[in-house]
Length: 327
Image (cartoon, rainbow, N blue to C red; front, side, top):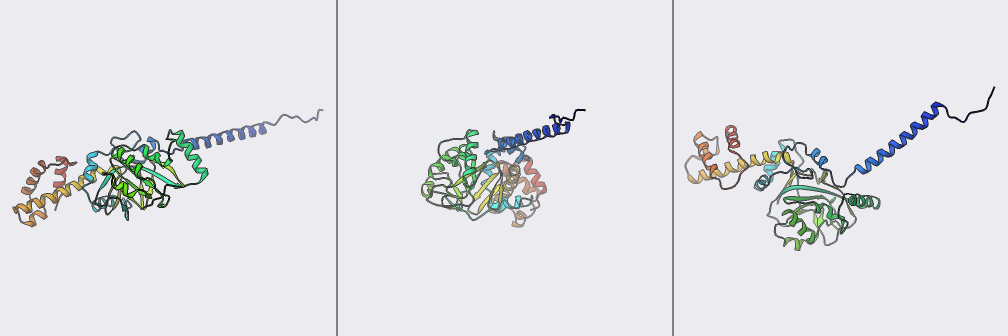
């Protein structure tokens, strides 16, 4: 009988070795996929997922294309009107206050492009720069220009600069002018800017910031573009619409903008029409401020037809409001 040991592994050992090999390959592929699936700039599909309640037209980057008419009408709103509308629909954390405003007395409204900055650390910085290069982002100048490069007309650049002021200046006068040339709008930064005096001379540009400083940006990394960010107490999504005035900044989910504007337009029209009637002295003030009679409603219908500005409200919208309006 031959008692010599064979060097051939058993079937169980073969299966074990094979299984370990498959697991190692699968793990490596999983890590590779995870790394290469991570984007500095969000994909259009991801932005569409974030804003899936929006049912209208979109930009190529996936952001909702809220109409220019709606945004222009939004400028006529008050912070309280917008807050009340959003609060009644479950959006309780949309307003951030206590800003330094470049040009007080002006109103800012537009479609949001988001960017998040973090404190610099060398290992992450090298990854961000490599990913930016892979995504075709500019390799000239500072990497803080990457969010600016994608801006389009009507956008508002909104950045989380983690409140950094000294060495946290996301833009100066040159980049501010570049932003205005691309968007016709301004910026909202939970961070700082430089060149306040020069930027004030750029007509049409405005900024809501947490500070300003003569220093240059230093030790900051852009870690996401067009992804969710935090601005103070507010979670902001790409494609939100921002409204900013002297009293605060509010971020409005895109899918609520049209109805919000119609609501505020009707309230504004009713107030304006009531002042018109009071000046005419045609009705007792109690009839004007209370529930309208059919006669006053008919007069309102004719008055709206001659209204000089373009409205979001359609004749059907007005009828709907009149039917449920009880003063």
